Image (cartoon, rainbow, N blue to C red; front, side):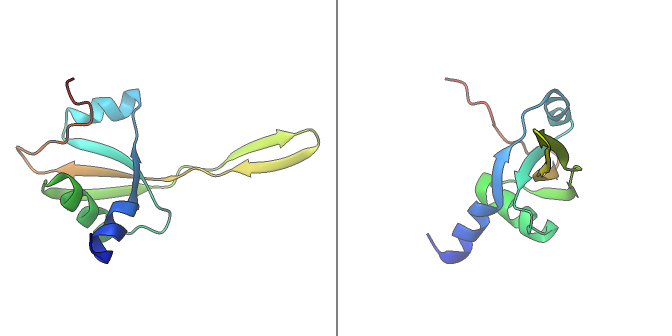
Amino acid sequence: MTESKRILADVLLRPVITEKATALMEQRKYVFEVLPTATKPLIRAAVEEMFRVRVTSVNTLKPPRKQRRVGRFVGYRTRPKRAIVTLAEGDSITLFPDT
């Protein structure tokens, strides 16, 4: 595996499986947790390389961090950056393979 392909494979951390993300799959939109430093062109290249699909758009979001408290100490839990990837007509990603 070349260095550039390894870097692209490290960009996508995991798919997000929630009720809202599952509903978006019907519209050819897939949600992934990505590295905080990932850019839209890098996310597009990673999805196209890993899943062999055509990406039409990438939207990113960083949810607000959550406050956590342990006794009198207040801290924050980080929230990972997410990317909503829209695929071209006719393309799809199989996240749940039939076994």
